[in-house]
Amino acid sequence: MNSKKKWLVLIIIVLVIALPIGIKKMRGEKGTEVKLATVAEQDIRPTILASGTLAYRTEVNLTSELIAKVKSIAVKEGDAVVAGQVLLSLDPETYRNAIEREEASRRQSVISIERQRVALSLRQKQFERSSKLIEARMIDQSRFDEDRNQLELAKVELKSSEEALRRADAVLKEAREQMAKTDILAPISGTVVALPIKVGETAIPSTMALAGAQLMKIADTSAIQAELKVDEADIANIAVGQKADVYAAAYPDRAIPGVVEQIALAPTVELQGRAYKVTVLLQAPADMQLRSGMSARTDIFLNDGGKRVAVPVEAVVSETGESGKLERHVWIWRDARAHKASIETGISDDSWDEVTRGLKAGDRIITGPAKALRQIKEGDRLSESKEKDDKSKAADKAKAEQEDEE
Image (cartoon, rainbow, N blue to C red; front, side):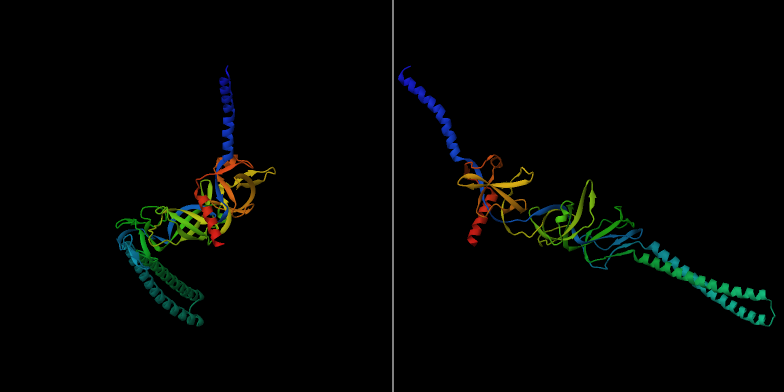
C-alpha cells in the first residue's frame, strides 16, 4: 500500500471516530430543548364543578282538589297573570246539586228544632201541672215521674235537633267550599309557563304524573336560579355566599354570575352515589333567554381570588421521598442548566399552584415538555424552546405588569 492510500485510510478512520464525538458534543452544547415560564403573581381561584338544571325562583304547579271536567280555560301559555285571577273553571253541576241537597237537609233540621221546641213547651206545662197535683196528692208518684221523664226526653231531643242543625251547617259550608274550588285562581302573580290540560278533559286530585293531575304551572320569570348536585366529597367546601359561574346549555360560552344561596342538609341518593342540592341565584343579563329546565354546568369558586406567587401546575413534579412523604419540586433554569428546587404549595386551581416556599417572583422554571421534566437531571444543559404556550405567555405578562407597578 502506497503512502497516499495509507493517509486516506487514516483520515477515514479519524473521521469515523471524531464525527460522532463532534456531533454528540455539539448536541450536548445545545442541551435539551425545554419550555420556560417566569414565576410571578397570579390570580388563583379554586373551583368545584357541578351540574344541574335551571329553575325559576318561584314556581307553582296548580292541581285540582276535585274530580270534574274542565269547563273553560281563561288563559294560554305565556300569558301574564295576577294573584287571585280566575285561570280555569271546572264543571260545577255536581257540586251545585250537593249544595241544594245540603240546603234541604238544613231546612229539615230547622223544622225539626221548631217541632221539638213545641213538644218541649207542652212537656214543660204538663210537668208543672203534675207538680201541683202531686202536692195535692191527686196523682200517684209514678204519674209524676213519667211526666218528669217526658220533659227531660223533650230537652234531649231538642239538643239532638240543634246538633243536627250545626252538622247540616258544616256540611253545607263544605259543599259551598267545594263549589268555590271549581274556579282555579292564580296563587301568585307571574307567567303561565305550562298548560297541559285542555277543555273537556277531566281534572283529578293527584300529585302523581297522571293525565289530568297537573292543570298548569305559573312562575315568576323575573328571577331564575340553578339547582345543582354537588358530590358529598366536595360539599364541605361549599358555603352560602360563594360566587359561581353558570354555563347554560343554550349559552355554553357565556358565564352567568351567581351566588350560592342555599345548601341542602339532607342528601339525595342516586345509584351508588350521594349528592347534595345547592341552589345558586343567578344574575342573568337581560339579553339572555333563559328557561326553566335548561341543563347547566357550574364552576363554584371557593375563594374570592387574589394575587399569589404561583407556577403552572404542569411544572410541579411530585414524588415520594425516602420517608414516604410526598415531596414536590420544580426545575429552575439558571445559566442554561437545570437546577432542582424543592417547594411547598398552597391553594391551586386548574392552571396554577401557589408556591409558599422555595421560589421567588422572577425565577425562571421549566414547564415542559413532560418527557423532559421526567428525564432531566441536576446540572443538565438546556436550551429554550422558541414556542411558548399560553401559560408561559401569561406568566411573562404578569411579570411585566409587576415590574411596571414597581
